[in-house]
Structures are given as C-alpha cells and as structure tokens.
Image (cartoon, rainbow, N blue to C red; front, side):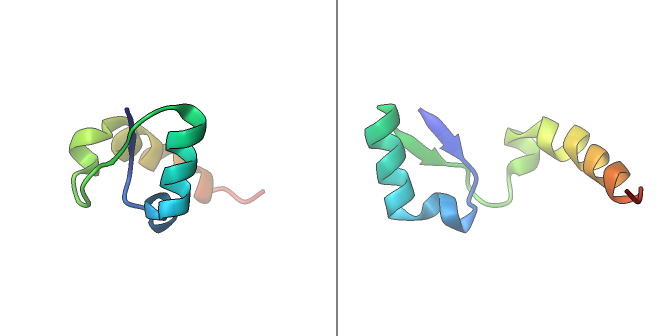
Length: 58
C-alpha cells in the first residue's frame, strides 16, 4: 500500500491508476490536516530544514 498526501496532483485519477498499474500497489490518501500525526519527520525535521535553507541566500 502506498500512502500519499492530499496534494491535488496525487489525487488525479490518472496518477492513481498509473501507480496502481505500474507499481502493483494500492493507493490510499492521508486525510487532510493530519500530516503532523502521520508524517512527523515532514512536519518537524523538514520544516526546520527548509526554513533554514530559505533563510540563506545562495
């Protein structure tokens, strides 16, 4: 089973069908608003990392 967030492109039927057909997996979606529970690394570590990157000029 592949769990995806509710990003609009992830929810396109063509994307879902391609993933299920090509990867031989069932696609399910994480309900909106619970990323903090289901994706703690994304919410805590990556948020901090991205914030630090954005604070620097390259």
